[in-house]
Length: 208
Image 1 (cartoon, rainbow, N blue to C red):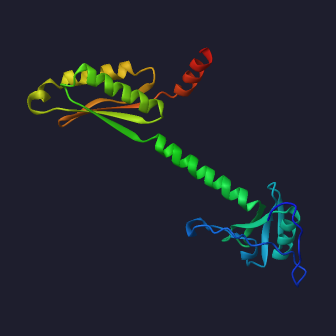
Image 2: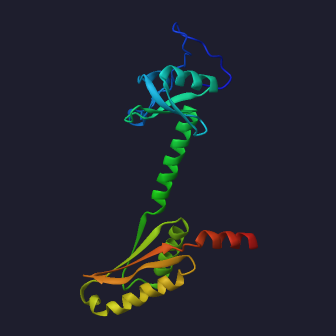
Image 3: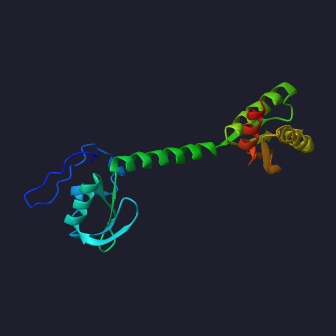
């Protein structure tokens, strides 16, 4: 219910609370709101978090109406159910915002894989290094995978030195989460963004 709207009464003298007209996907309908609540008595929590004790549903709706807010059944399994007074539209917005932030953080920890060969020349290696730096600055982890063919495996130490050199060149933005390790014909190394990367970039920006 929006603030500033008058409160009308039904035939029983109970404040009427408008039903929300906005349709939400089934997966998002987690709580009963306002007139959807059916329990005769509820444990009521005020908008500021204060416990108002156990009251009748009619009393709870009346208090919510006087606040110009909504009554939300947040714990339907409790005895009696727990209801909280809040702005349901604002609550939905904040919940959606938290979900987007959660997804953003999940994307930020994706593992980006860059493939190399022992015969990779300096130009291509520099291209891979720049790609890795971009990914790391975006918050991603980076895995370098170096593949050996035929007799190349007998010189796997050269591949290890290549990966260690890449890690050294990226030490300004990366930490080694997994040192070069050989499994079969593949050697891998994993880098993660430095924990202080954001602080370092902020300090650099201030100096500029």
